Image (cartoon, rainbow, N blue to C red; front, side, top):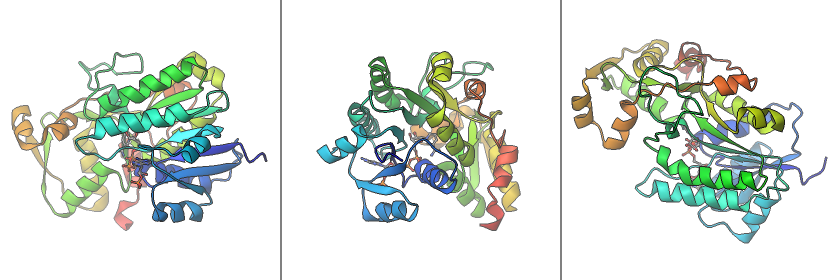
Length: 313
Ligand SMILES: NC(=O)c1ccc[n+]([C@@H]2O[C@H](COP(=O)([O-])OP(=O)(O)OC[C@H]3O[C@@H](n4cnc5c(N)ncnc54)[C@H](OP(=O)(O)O)[C@@H]3O)[C@@H](O)[C@H]2O)c1
């Protein structure tokens, strides 16, 4: 096969990216790319990539070298799973990384670029209605930081770039930040502060998340033209956060010590960033994803959490 038809992927050492890379290299289904090149910043990442049969490319999206720009512009497919570190300069770093990547893509050569960000871009529901891609966004938490990348993507789209913006909801699985946090609290029998009534969250199992990313990389362009290139990745059923925690507790044989607090008390307890997530009802819909033809293997956390096989870990 033509060796110039490679997939270039960022973030292969992160939670979403490492699972995506394992998925894309494990299943040998016919794929339209001939090889996978992955962006890494260190030798450990390079070794992990080689072990999976991918070719590591050393570089940094904050300061891409001419060689890195060349690799990006030569890619036939792009999957952008890198994320900036969660520091006070997150928004600035994320914008720079996104703009550098998108600016280096050659819209006339690439067949599809999938940009991964968070569904927190759409923010909280004002009422019980589901939020979809047509709802005016009200970004919360990390959400505002995706604005620069989305603008760059839409501008590149006007110049002919075939792209998808994937707005991923709360991805759960071993290694996801909130799954890890709750498992630790359950193991230590610590009280877990939650809003009363609990905030409703959109969730997606990591396996469905990476399956959906592959689906979007290879979907026929005509379907995206009709449906829209901005797609929320979430399962069929947003649920109260307490349902997720209680499901984790059930499958690990622990007891969840939920500390149910009214809004003001929770706000006083948590850092502002965490409170913004913990208090937001995010009734995000996967109607567009389903309409494009994707079906979640785990329609809700009730099916997905037991499938993580946490009890045996
Ligand atoms: N995790 C979730 O629950 C979740 C939920 C919704 C949406 N998302 C979205 O999914 C995407 C991936 O998130 P994640 O949780 O998988 O992130 P993550 O675990 O923090 O991984 C970040 C990745 O980006 C790489 N990276 C960081 N700075 C870089 C730079 N300057 N140049 C090149 N690579 C760099 C890291 O490489 P190093 O190993 O070198 O640091 C790592 O591979 C993000 O867009 C995020 O918004 C995640």
